[in-house]
Image (cartoon, rainbow, N blue to C red):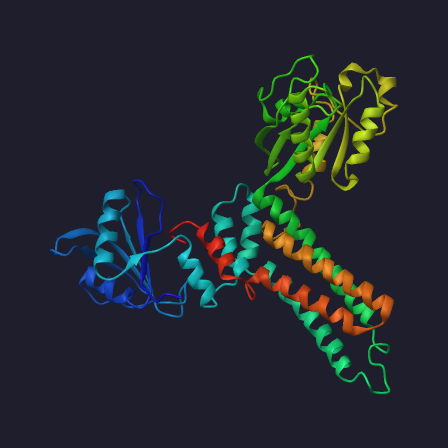
Length: 443
């Protein structure tokens, strides 16, 4: 890793009360003392003038010096806190670079903190997620990850796998002994506990991913089931055309909304039916593509027409775990007719039932959830946890069938490797570059 001293503007561009230039590296103190024409002490707030190369004052303000290793990056760090303004900050940043610093790359401060063991990878990612939080729930979850809550769960899980691996592989080394160590052990109980722990973390991480990236919700159903009307109701305006003519929606329509503080990507899809129209066929193909990727699918059925054979065919193709079935156009039904429907009844004309649907969708994520156990997570974290869970389940299955540790040892190793990718203990350089390049320059 480069040992250059780096510099960047750490505050948003534009005019403001304060503009901060942040330096990190071995030359940070010397550059700051040159630009202030004074000596600086660590752990003290000092007021100084900032001079250019001709001894003219560029600006004045506060200087903070954080001595290595007691800084965010683990290196010497200096912050020059002057007045906000693009011209002033550019002048000050240019002078800093003249004295030996270079401009920081996106995320380079967090990257140095990671390589200097000030943060693990989940904590580093949580910084960017905290800054970009779209709701209070997401901000709180990101702060829990930044404080190490997510990492703590992963480390405990990894330690459990390591302990089991040590026992299994030690037993393999003494395979010819008269005592069968594996047969006399409680491996089934241990690995089941590890599987349960992995599943719990995966569930919480999936909640965190939704808070971070937004829940993807597809609205599906036959033509004229009320899909576009529901999209318009949730969006608060006419985002999609609504008519009595079947097949009005031919393409995918996307809207970004918030339900009780939870960011949601709502996708209105073409009506699902058999069609000979090539344009409608393409729309239906795209609809199924979006439905299969969605976190949750709202399957709409026209209550005034009842459940049809076509509706049942659609139900059979969908995964029950991610589907919420809703009967629409409840305003067209009489009271005695409503009693015939066991599913949720809604109406976009009267609003009937829609608040209950929103409660169901957001119950695990919304700001009113007071448990505050969820930590922020990303898709890569979820995929790594799914991978480790698959290998752990496979390891248990193999041991249940064979009572042999030799075959399960490899699955345990792969599960541990997947989890180590989350915290960065086993991570490729390409992945690190991709992660940190998505950060803002000042971080």
